[in-house]
Length: 125
Length: 136
Image (cartoon, rainbow over all chains, first blue to last red; front, side, top):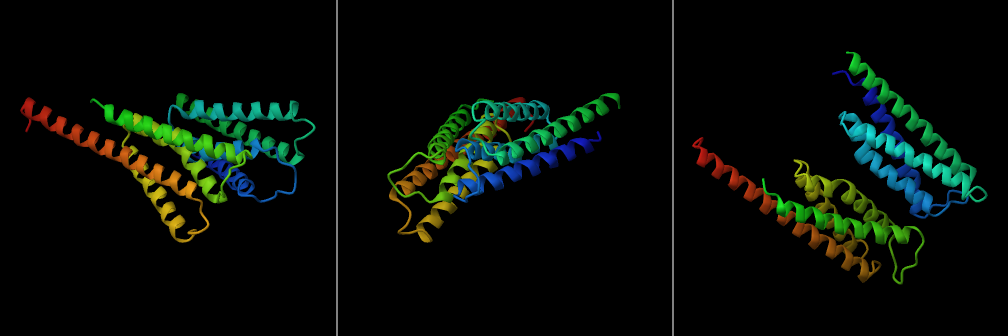
């Protein structure tokens, strides 16, 4: 079975997860990012980054039946956190944090689209 | 196959990982501690805790072929970190952190012991079943 789109989706997930680990890890290690950071946000980003790199990206790569559920779960979680930031933290959250979360949401939307097309291609094949 | 020992090992891994996530998470969220915490040690414990709860404990529970390598890697990582703390961070690291790491290493030794006994019992039962069916 050809799974090129899933492989691309997995690489994208790995990159976005790796970036979250790197950026979140730096803040958690005490580096000052130069703007106000809500204390739970780097912990959240770092945790999801770890889970993405070590679990989600691998599940997508091996075309596991759990991959779609986990990817939808990650996208929903990011969307939920974005909603919280835009409502409860509207006046506190830094534009950089909103930008980073927007990038994550877009990338996960692309990942989900790639997985959807892969699934459709496999069904028609 | 009866996998009771693996289930106990998984529950123990989940517990030790959950404690690391809860304790590390609270400090990462800004809770004060009354002892000095090395910042990378905190992040390390939290990371391994997350991976244990969401990956290793599940692999052990499902008796996956990757369970033993994952458990061995966790034990080896904790032992290496303990070695670093006792050498490069001697005099800096708090007794509390060393105690916590000792508890983790002991817990992972027990987890590995349970998994090895389970695997031994499984092999023995498999051999017996083949003997009984006359294929050996």
